[in-house]
Image (cartoon, rainbow, N blue to C red; front, side):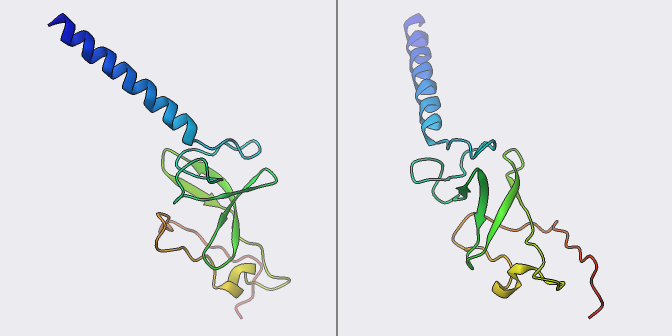
Length: 128
């Protein structure tokens, strides 16, 4: 009985130590001061490749399907949310710079989605 308990304990400890090593290899390094939590990926050798984001000059970016990019304002790994910064206005108009590409569009094959709790505010716009 004692031998089987010891064998199970050694097997469990070995398995847990390998799991920790595997996760450490898959996690991407920080992007500037911002940690990149698993499964997000900033390169081919880390994270899960379905969850690609981009690190450029210490800033994280989310690239949409239509060629537009959005700066990532924050990442909450517990709620599995990425908050992106909205694009600025196009010149002196009341439309966003990404309206020419029809706003943010996500690849249906990727695991991202847009929540229904988004808020859009129009400031200093006329009724027209």
